Image 1 (spheres, rainbow, N blue to C red):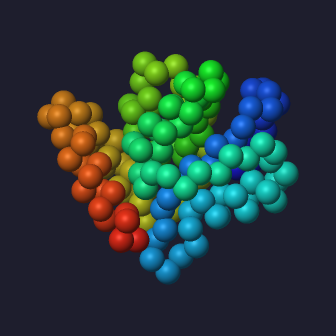
Image 2 (image 1 turned 90 degrees about the vertical axis):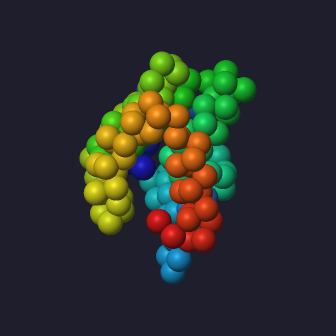
Length: 143
């Protein structure tokens, strides 16, 4: 969120989309954590949307909003998430910035594995299958 605050003047007062529907069992909703951090930093123009349980769905949703509103999508992801987000956004006109942190250390290994797995899943045409499988786990509050 600190990076989002710092980048706001560069991109004007475009809305800051906080997009997640991840609720890990026994923890606060991921979106609530992001909103609290944004509000604490005084970030304005928040658009809060509880959609999409995983990166693919979140990016698809954000790209659709940007296209409808005729805005450039600026994505902020952690350095571990960057290669996967880059792959999913390639050739879609997205600006991408890296935040240097690990928001959920337990998923660091998964981020590294998915960096390699996503191109392979796409080559094999298995992205949809993987997405459905992941969403079914996330709906139940499982990572």
